[in-house]
Image (cartoon, rainbow, N blue to C red; front, side, top):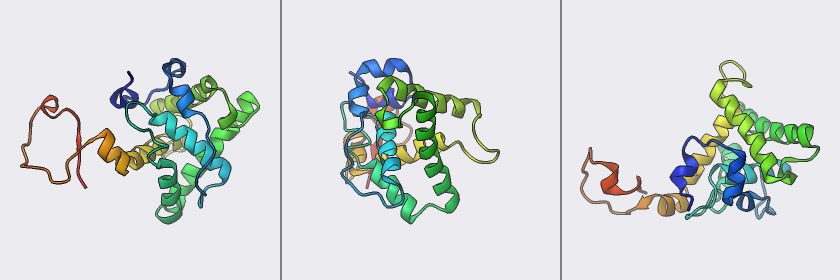
Length: 186
């Protein structure tokens, strides 16, 4: 069984990932929320990409944790102009690149095509290409927002992490193997 830690390790996308069962989980689903900062098309791209970044495994994925809604709210209420332009521009680029390469919008592509496109962005992040000097790559920023949104959600904090609302004594410098997983507190 695929575990979250394996899915997050490097966040590297490969075409072989589609064969692990992620393909059906990341498929486009109708939006059950109304975006405020994003267009419906951008929100659908965000929904699918978020689920590819943190898929449903033995715990709920990004979609079930409400990560796309979290990012849309952050864009509406908290992000500055540069952050908005970076993320919204990146979502627009994903759709434009999908149309250029495959003749259709990102959410309509086959899982293997989606993974290949996301792999390209992941490789751009790793090599430092495809970004403006002094500005992060949109995909790196998007991965950060998805990760923050997931692990600060109730789902991520209580189901993917161990959760103890009243933790005991602090015992620093103990091996992670003794704890099992990282801890989240609220």
